[in-house]
Image (cartoon, rainbow, N blue to C red; front, side, top):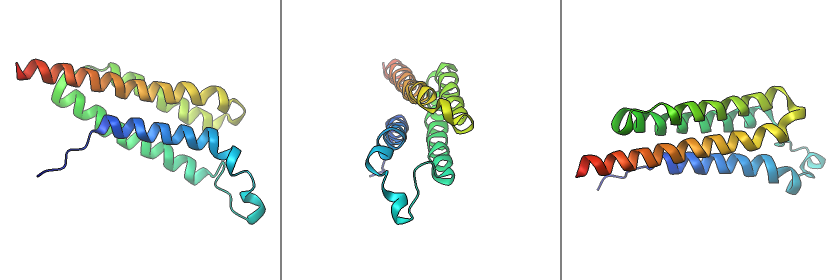
Length: 126
């Protein structure tokens, strides 16, 4: 039996994990620097999360585009989300304003891709 990965679901999961990291982690782990541990605003971790969201998103959206729906809308919405994520890395003072639209755009891109792929898949099967 072959394992089939739902890349859109994985993309939504990584986006939500990123949002939880950015929103809740500072609240619960603000005492870590007292112990010499700093993962809050750690550039390597931040860019790693962005890279993970990007790689998973590229796989999911390219599969949907190439094999199912041939529409650019999910990729455009995803690109906007990634741009917002990168912008928050450069303009830290605007992070709280840049993060929500980034996460919403990325999740919405996966949702659009999923819906378009399912609609096209159902059309092909009938």
